Image (tube, rainbow, N blue to C red; front, side):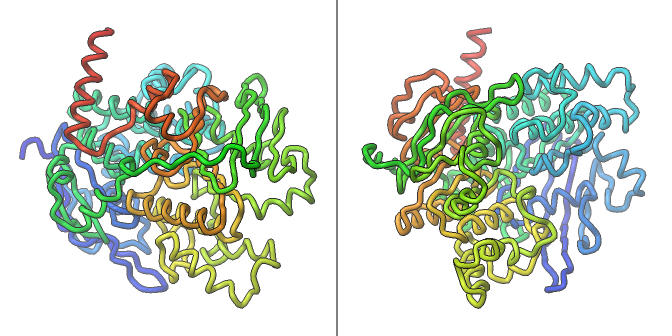
Length: 543
């Protein structure tokens, strides 16, 4: 018990809404020891994030209410502390990395100011914070830290913003770090760096790590123990190896069965087929920065083309440039023979119904003032010839159920859903117009494995039924392996390798591609432990 840092006892949290009381967390108990990594695993809406938010007093009350339980930090119940005591604790002794970095970074302040503010708010010397901030940014793998320290959140990719959030949380070397999906937006190589950094900090300081995740590969890499949650309750606990190799609860078995990367790879389509999208020498400059450098690719009718690469490689910029959300510097993007890049506004409006996008960050792409019904049915308002108004409600219900939500969710607003649930809503909105091409920018990265499998099965069925094509931007390589027909590998704004999924995964030609694949995590703790040992041996041999 001397090593016990945190103990949650019989915690219950309710949310009182106009549609009734939601029992988000019910009689939950677990503990975290010094130097230990405890993973809380479960689907979106299972209560993972709510139980963690209660520790830091981040639940809006009302409508939230902690109806029972204790949260003991070093033996003291934080729920009975005065507000000033909680403020001294939060950020300094207990820190948190949030799932959605853009919503938690202030857009009007530089990232350097925001990281430094974390330190000065707890009494650190202001004159020392800039050097410390640069050091933190370097440790989490942000390039050009000396220059980027004065940049703003919107000037970074999603993965880079997550690294900034991690640097902020680690600034004061907390005793407990609560990491809510800390690597969801990160590519596999940076994910490996961040997990290694967290492990290194644990060894230095004895920090306890509370990891909230749906990624079984991350669990296998770092977790000592696992708590599995479903519908606000704990259904299983054990070591990472016990839970993976000998699950007892049907829900845990379902999660493990849904893990991607073990299925058959898709056969390539006939490359002689006329493409639905043909990009030629597409280039995008931001001042002196070349974000896209002569990118050329094709997407065939009924084909899924995956784009992989590290954060900042140009994946999202490519997607936005194709859709004219960013203006290209040069090049062409032919959609059914029409150049999207040079198209006038009137023609572009007509073609937009055939090309939809699911963005990486659903919080930013869903209007917070609109109900989910309004968010999805807005497509029918903009294109009224699609569907008669009398059928809108039934169609919205159908779309919500297709992506694993319930029809009654249509009356809620985006802030009432978890990150994974908001992403499902964004996918439902993209499907509303039955487009010919869907650009998915990390569309399923925030989803748990069972919902990932459900959504990908849905996308595959729609592809079969409607001849849909997908441009699928992802960092989850096992997911890409199961879903894509062809894979395009990007680095520094250029395509470094492309080919059928079988060739890319079984016989990659480029070292960069091989390193990406090697950095992917196995959900099996035994296999991942072997990989980790091998990696450390190689590092020792080269140092």
